[in-house]
Length: 330
Image 1 (cartoon, one colour):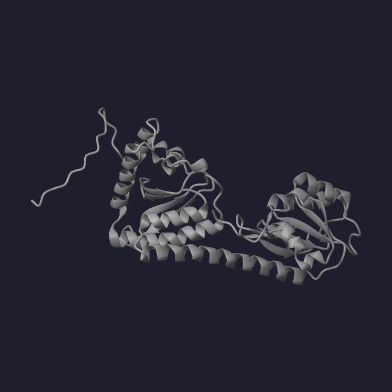
Image 2 (cartoon, rainbow, N blue to C red):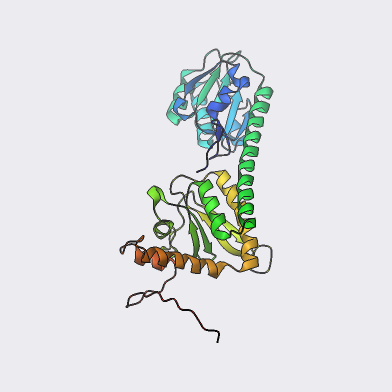
């Protein structure tokens, strides 16, 4: 499972956490005091903005850490409450107010509203240069993005080495599943399963995961947080699609770095499938693995029918009898 991220970098939102921002020298030198939202310091800071206008919420997109000296907060409690509520509704990461000429202590209306809205509110007891704070946090965010790209490129390198070493699509999917910490599926554009790799929760077979969460016969959308990446090359035109990679949020929610890795793996899979026409071979291999597991007792009688249907075996009234034969020269 993927690990090793900087403790202050949030791989879920591809930014840094509020806590990490407060630990950087720029804000730390302002002697920050958390007045509200102490339990929400793991929120993602996507960007930093500084401003002093009352309607600043309309300028934000969400995920920002807002720096202000408080001149736009208003003088009346009603104005201050409305200011905080609009920021919370916009979904900013945190509000940081520098004490000074405008406020020597943040008003109770501001603090109480932030607590009620669940918005992290921090006051700085010393003056800090906002431009230096902004540059410092933005540098941290950009460095974190670069670290994600490096990790995704490492998956690409391992997949390439697997192919050069004689491996194929199953090996690529296994590498991606190990990195993501979740089962990975390769499906056709109409939702038919070609191959699965990786284990589900408590070592569950990935076919059981597919049956429960992704079976197209159930006409249900993929679970929230799923990653779907097209494998290009199914026909004429640059927008054609041959297959689809699916990462399901079974053991943990996929992070942005997992999507990056899946996109790079999809490029490798496109080349392999175009060269070897492996779709049917993969489906046949998956059915062969199923029959082997069934014959050797690794699949229970209760689970076998559902897994057989997922793999494309046609239901019938009689028993399923695998037959192996060797054809003569003629």
